[in-house]
Image (cartoon, rainbow, N blue to C red):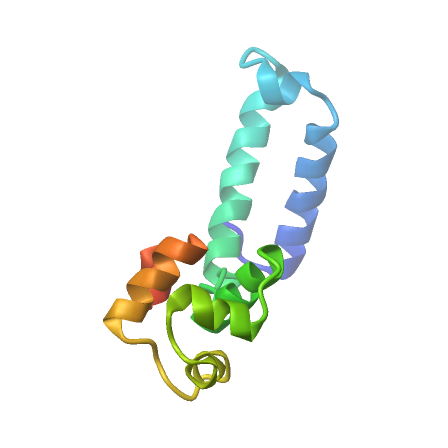
Length: 119
């Protein structure tokens, strides 16, 4: 168990050194293979506790998908079959999509339902 930031940084440096040798990654008989796996697990546990990855907000994911799909608010409103003002309310966090619209967001924008539903 890593207890301090200093220990964490030292172990991360060691992991980076071990990663330089492909044998440590691919060859289970290599000297550094076991060390790399143990240290990687320790780093992962520490990061999960102190640097958890937050779920993205629905608004952020919609905006990303809009950029990826080259959609503006008007095109998105047409795709979701809602008014442009309603899309604006969703994107500004002023209102939440109805279940029907949430389903359309998930299907038509390819956004995981757990993100759309906030679970």
